[in-house]
Image (cartoon, one colour):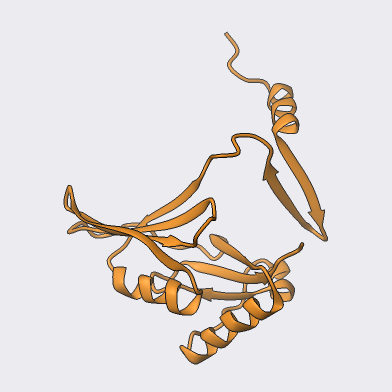
Length: 159
């Protein structure tokens, strides 16, 4: 029994994904499951520095938290009325993951004012700008690292 063929996957993706080309970047928008939400979760040993970074520098909000849930504490960071958020957890277990220069969270500022505010926060908090591995981001964003060393890019929205 054949589980999947490439042509079947291409037809499936074509039916459910919109592709928008912006220079060399392909922006993919899902056309289905309109109520689906996205959570990006990561375990850390630096919970409070991450909370401070994502709220004070990036400008996100704490939208929830939990304590001692099966030996885990955690926080949800995002914004009101958006379909995604970040989750950071801490426990007595050490983390074993390592960032790669191509592993990025890309935040698109909704306006020039929002972009400028985040840039001011980066400077005020003495956060070093990094040279991106992908040259696209050198021209189209600011690359920095969070307290765990994972990279993120701040860019102006293509819209």
